[in-house]
Image (cartoon, rainbow, N blue to C red; front, side, top):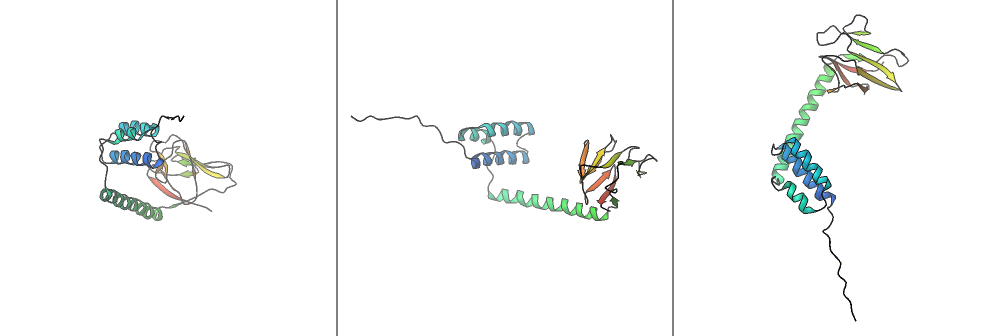
Length: 183
């Protein structure tokens, strides 16, 4: 006597490639303005939690599946815009005055601001009286914004609290920019 066994079949698990493709379609939808940021974030969460291909298909059904030509066009635009940003930064970096880092053995931070008592006095209207400080901590240079009005940036990113800096970094206090240099 032969017996037959029946086992329930389950849909195959999603591959990483399928999930990555769905996330790319969602990213492209945001880039093209077809999805709001909130909708993108929600759909991305659902895509990461999806277990079946039909769940992913439902998340991307209202978005166009771009062909090779549009991907090439977006890639070219991205490459050109990235090049111009890098070119502008390189051009500006060479024109900026150097800010010499203090001697590593210095125990006191270098205060930067318009205040006459500052170690580095910058007399510019976009620099606060007590703008920032630079100190050596744990073998690294740390730049701390001291609640300035116009902000402190490192390589174009605003410093919130403190940031680690190194030689060659571009730092600005308000609109006064410098390139950090070692002694």
